[in-house]
Image 1 (cartoon, rainbow, N blue to C red):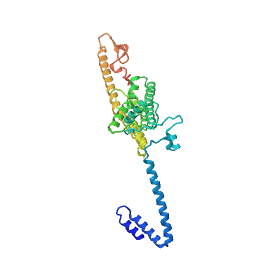
Image 2 (tube, rainbow, N blue to C red):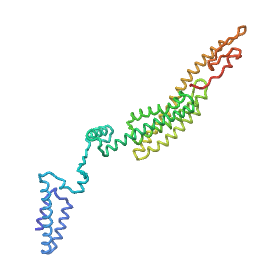
Image 3 (tube, rainbow, N blue to C red):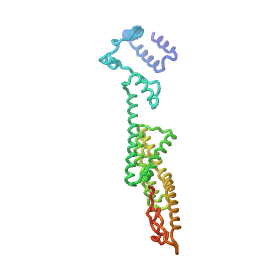
Length: 339
């Protein structure tokens, strides 16, 4: 009989693996070595276990086949407590159809849920409110940093125009940064939005150095080599420090380092290219106006045999007579202000 069982198992292709057949063969070999009484005892025990398992399976099928609706009494108390409050209020769990890791589907899902229950709670709503709060906080921090930096520059230069020119690198650099991020498909997230106030504080350094450098020059402005080197080295070391975060495995730190490096680099570009160009244009207009005033004054200087004439020194707006100057070379020097 045992040999027939083993032959029957071997004749079932694809249902039992070789390892299972090997275990069955070993069992049959050990069973064959037992006496008849021992074999009968083992087979009865196996038959009893098999009958119990079949009975439990039939009971499960009978419970499944019931047509009566499920009631709370059919469930365990631990499960009921999770979904039914003591006041008999039920917990309703709503799952989104779209992927809510993106902001737009998440906002749409939150709007749909709140149209039914404005006081609904859950992880998606917490994530949405937290991200919106962080975004608003960083935007306000960037605005406060802009106002604070501009106020300090007003105290330094005492000129609205010069303070605005000094603030041009962080403001234009931020616009250039956002354009670069859009071109590279880099999104703002709660990890890298902190760059807004940081850029306002870091990027203004180059503008301050360039404007101060222009005030010490006469005629048409050209950025000095000392100011150029100082701004370049200072900004590059800052970029290296922030760029070191890009080697981190954490995606948030990587994103923060990347955006800060791009932002500081954009401020550097504005400080060394755009701002000196604007200052050169302003100083050229100033130099042209001063030269025109100079020529007018030279034509008004009296010559031998003529009566003294009263001329207006446009550079100082003070009425002077021609006998105060022996020649046009004694005109007051031009200053380096734009305000």
